[in-house]
Each structure stands twice: as structure tokens, then as C-alpha cells.
Length: 435
Image (cartoon, rainbow, N blue to C red):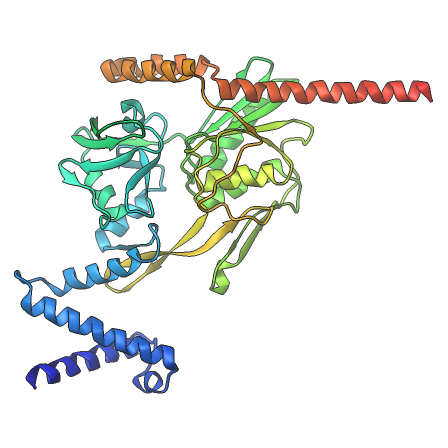
């Protein structure tokens, strides 16, 4: 009897809390539809379970622990990108896109089966130098096993730490019989998101390692430098192993390539504010007669896929390389009471061809894989850096000079464009003579 009264009081307390946060009133719930009545039954079920755990679990647990676990469990049922942020975790999350933070320099995701997968290491960071690859799966972090219930933020918190300290992560890679340990020294991650140079044949090369707040300004400087080279034959935009970043930066950079009014990307979801369309707002800074080739692979994700799709599906660029990652969902951060927040998926991205790439990726126009020679070269360079960190800059310069199979094919596409253009011009002149 006492238990029943206690449980009833607990349910009433919970419903009163619902009233206080402005979602429903007790009267409206009582008069609600069948769905609302079912919702009330599950609230009661939850309270029964909560009381049992609180009173009978082998060790006492605080309401904080139980309710955080309950909320996170609900979010885990949605998709791998939804998560609860405690006040401390929220502060860490807000640091991620600032362009400078402490850690290893990797972008991670949770797969549908709960694995912790690396989207891509950020170029030049400790993880990159240690030989971490896109698609690697982290199975253990400093002795702590990665389980399906571990959230992304819990994993991030474990891997971050004081610069100069070491951490060992156990990695499983496709083709390996068992996981292998990688001991990496944490560092303050200062990310330069844009790199550029002139390739043979007067071809401009721009590489985006990630999209952050500084990316647009860095891109402008790169363009100004490339424009100084008269007779620029084309531009290669390298987005390989770019895990994404800020949508606004990717949209702004797309604007440099596309004619005014072209659709860049749009989002759709259940709530009105999730329905948005992004268009090019200016005339192109890069003349449309300069051919553009996008280089992509399995580590090209999210905002990097948006830039790829915007140019490819507006017929502004040819895509070369391998199929992209396929991260096409939008997460929104909602603040809660007591300094908490939740990040939930509120929409999906749709390309200018009206297709959603989430879980599918973008297939290149011209599929090219790295050659065996390329793979051996990069393996050798990674081992060199691992054995002699002081040679990092020297090795980086050697890598920049290396023309891998994908980059070589991108250069050929630009040359083919000019050859075709010249043939068309010649044909036109001959036609005029014949007339």
C-alpha cells in the first residue's frame, strides 16, 4: 500500500514537473488522444523502473547519474549523432570548431552498430603523424574498452588531456587479424585549414583539411596568391580526408565558384526552422572558364561533401577519386536547464540534384584509387615521421612533391578540358571556312 502511494506521488511529481517546463498541463494530458495516453503509461513505467533501481540496486546511485543515463539511453535509440552534454562536456564541445584545441587531431563518429570509427585524422596533427587512417576503429582507449553505450563525448574526453602527455589507443583496421596499439603524444591542435601551391602545367592546387571559422579568409588568401600566376589553367580542390566542420564556411566557399542564384544545398526536417535553402549570393570570383576538379575519398565527409555536391551537381566541377563518407544529417544543439544541452538530428542535407547523401556518399565522376606505389610511399613516410619526429617538416615537403595517382588523374582532366576546348574552337573555325 505504501509503495503504491509512494509511486503515485512520484508520478504526480513528475507530471507537475512537466507542467512547470511548459510542455503540457495535467488536464491536457488527461484529455489527450490515445497517443498521449500511451505516453502517460510509459512515463509510469519509467518511474517504476527508476524507483526499483534507486531502492534496490546493489550500490546507491545519485539522481544525477540515473537521469543522465536515462536521457542518454533515449538519445542512443535515435541515431549515433544524438547525445547529451553535461556542463563540462558542453564546454569541450564548444572548443572543437574554434581552430585550436588540445588532443590527438581526429574526427570520430559512432556507427549504427556502436563502433567508434575515425572519419579522418586532421593533417599535420599527432594522430596523422602516427599513421591513423580513415575508417580505423578505436576498440580501446588507455585500457578502457569502447562499448556501444560509450558516447562520442565520453570518447573525446578520454582522448583529450594535457599537451605533452601520452595516450595509447587500440586500433582495428580492415585486413588486420587483431587490433594494434598506437601510442600518441597529445598536443595543442592548431589547425591551418587551407594549403595551396602551383602544380606543373600552371594548375592551382587548394587543399582543405577541415572547415572552420578561419577557412573562408584562408581561402581568399590562397586565391589571391594563385591569381598572381598568369595563365592559370585550372584549379584542383583537394578534400580527401576532410571530415567536414562548419556548414557556413563550406557554403561561403561554394559561393566563390558558382553563379549567383545557384542552389548550394538545402535541409529538410519535421520542424519549420529545419527547412532551409542556401544559394550562391554573388557572381563567381573564379571565372567559369577555369576548370575545377574535386579530389575526394572515403574520408571526405559532411561539410566537405556539401562543397563537393554543390560544385558537382551545378556542373561546375568534375569529381575524381573514391566514394565519399556519406554524412548528410544536421545536428542542432539545444540548451537545457542546469547547464546541460542535447544535440539531436533535426534535418538532412539535400544536394542540388535533390538527393540526400546520408549513408550513401557521393560517387566520383572518375573513380581512381591510390596505386600500390602511392600506398608504399605514404607508409614509408609515416614510419619515418614516427621514428624521427624531428624530420616531420622535411617529410611533409617530400609528400607535397609527390604526385599520387588520384592527383595525377585530376591534372589530366584539366589538360583534357583545354584539349577539348581547343578542338571545339578549331572545328568552329573550319566550319566557318567551309561556309
